[in-house]
Length: 162
Image 1 (cartoon, rainbow, N blue to C red):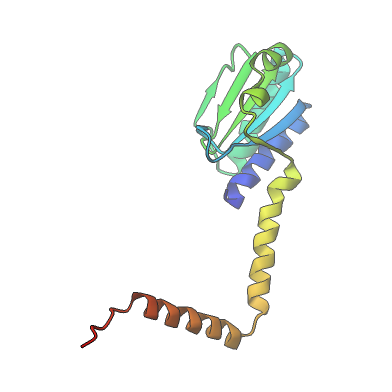
Image 2 (image 1 turned 120 degrees about the vertical axis):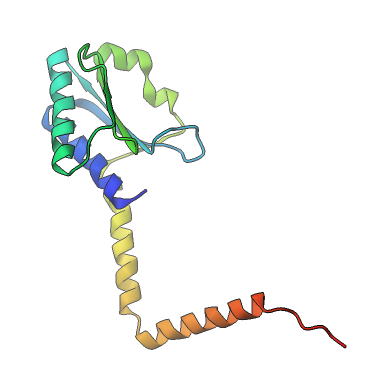
């Protein structure tokens, strides 16, 4: 997933933490599953007012980054608020609803990750870029030339033998 989406998920988690959301989980959905999104952020609030405050903080924080929720469900009842950002969905549950729906069990093919895991791929990409930048221009040209000549041979029309 893109570094931008991972950063947005991390911001949503920080918003949940700031408003004292409990049992915060991040699920990275399996690409082979029928999941309609890439990540779930799941947390629990103790009462309707706190659940709404968490949802408000998630929206406020992401709005500052120019990211708007596609849809918000359940805000008025505040038993299970779902904030849909297409690439990730934030679920804010009451204790009873979280136990009843048990999304972690329902989506058990998803991988549980942490905020630190969200930052890892970006670090790997930077390291790879540094590695490539560290190579001399001559060695980069040499690799490019070999690849190009192999491609030419692979796709060149075969000559008829007479």
